[in-house]
Image (cartoon, rainbow, N blue to C red; front, side, top):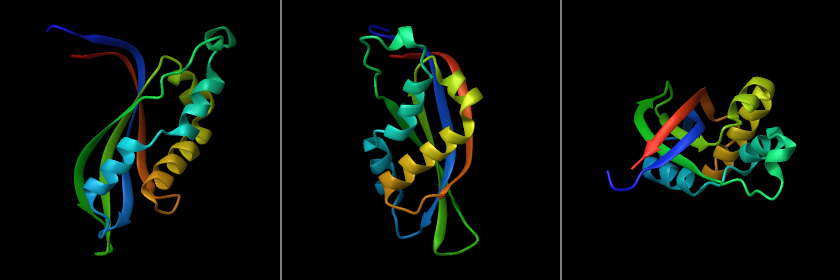
Length: 135
């Protein structure tokens, strides 16, 4: 390994996204990859201790990974599965103290990015991580 980045703290969200079968999965992935998750990141910044926010710009980074597709009850509707990771060591506070707000913000960001009705994020699981290494 020539170059590695060690990241302390993260939040992974594994979720299903219910949408019309005419919306291609690669288009969903493209929209999620371009999404800035502004509402979700606002909660992160609001949860940071004051001394951590002085003169610091929070890196707005999220990583999207596509998981297998499943077909819903309606033949015109599918549920695609995705995973998004947010770096940062304050996510535990967000999950613990602002869970409902986090769920609403994440749903808003995802649905607005993809151009589908809010409430289309299903079976979201919020998983706190500790240390990840990218190389």
